[in-house]
Length: 130
Length: 130
DNA sequence: TTATAAAATGAGAATTATTATTATTTTTTG
DNA sequence: CAAAAAATAATAATAATTCTCATTTTATAA
Image (cartoon, rainbow over the protein chains, first blue to last red):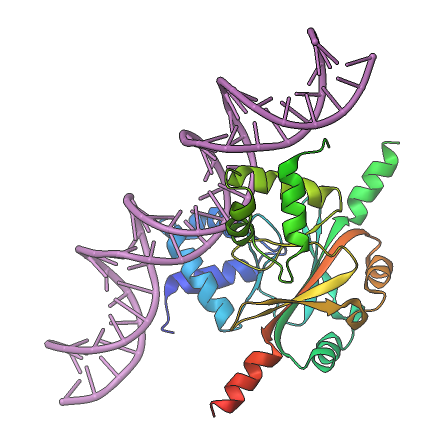
């Protein structure tokens, strides 16, 4: 993987983002710093960065993938109301890889847990309006 | 939800299938019993059945959703070599919903764990060829 | 440093999965 | 059996992502 300015900007933009943006969302922000960047370049680089474990691609948040600069083991929660994506501590499923490998005889290379429901903010909003 | 012959055939076909097919795969099989069925009808019914918790839609297995007639709590593993989807016992992550709700204050309505790697068959094939 | 090869880019076409539209048919119900 | 509600087939439309390709950028090494 050679250096490229576009890839650098993509990575820095993703790192400075608290949320876990979709490609489309990231593209809108990127355009400010790098107005000529192409959507294909963004997708190409996101995939490359993910393959090299520099970032993480979060699948299962239909209809589009989200991207996370945090590569430490952790999981994700998407709020069905506000659509924000939150990190969930890996503590909620201790030894999940080891247990799965022991149960099955499979080799686990990747895993993710995706939760959905209502986040704290949205739960409180709903309570107030009742 | 009214009765419809198409929905019945879709459900029975899914139930008689050990694998966890995509819509496209299911469509090919369905055509034998119900040659005039439309792909839109299949998608409409799969979504309806999933909304009513009669079947389960498995997201996170890009590039397309898979469908599972087993609605009991369990998880999924996709083999990166043979692409088969296997069930994983819920035992590998005990109390994962309760723990997540306690940690966050969120309300968890759904969750799934998706693992990927190599299944037992493919691991053995690789060993043999070495 | 410069020539060459390898990698990356932008622009837009192409592809794939899925959903929406609509006229028609099927199912339910009183 | 008639009317209303739901479902269908066919196909157009959409949205996310990947592919193509001519051009530009980056790395290499003579």
